[in-house]
Length: 349
Image (cartoon, rainbow, N blue to C red; front, side, top):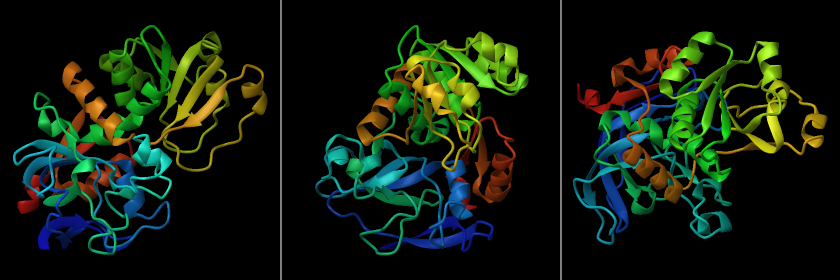
């Protein structure tokens, strides 16, 4: 084992602060990665503050990791020292259930192992995330990052990116489809970029005209102000697909009205109870409401390769690790366009 610097919290009501954690030595299938950048996800905040229950302390968040390979285990074949790589929201799964067999490790029937707060089968206790100097991960859960992409912007692709890419691909969004992206934040802005690159007619659905203007700069063709009843009525029964990124419980009825017959709205943001919606809105036109979470390793690699081919990157604000507590407050107040990324070199200061 080796001791490395990290940032974490000792309790749900505690600030993040410097601490030391242990990393294992490489097993034959492991890759050791020096972390260069780590994205800040709203899930990090929920986990640190135990909003969803079950958080283990001390907690070291971070599941949008970009770094360079510094060493490999004796059986590793996919990577070599110096490779630019990423680690997303999971670092292991059972590898033998039906979901894992289909490359859907995020839905592992025995529970995927989170990059942080998961069960550490090597050292015991729980896993620690990317707010740290290095990480050791089985090569099956390491991703190759296209070298042509601006490295410091890539990290949020490993959560915000794949969270929006996966449903767009699973529900086969294609050229000419009318696609609505509901909510413009860390997830929504990636949804706009991906749907645009896939050739869809992209409509930004937002309560804010100002965010609508931002969405047009990101690739939206049109803006629909959801508080405007006349606009909503004009778009009723016209969408081929809706990606709902609203991160809190809300009234879904107005959005269900926007769907065509036999089409789907996918929830990716609200991991909590939702307001009741009227069953008739689904039944009378065979509409669907579904959910989706991140993506498997194969699909995440496809997303990264697509971003490399189309030069798609998140819009980020760079911070030093010492600014993390302030950054959390700014995320909560929606004061970031659209994701924070930590320059992990600052951990050495």
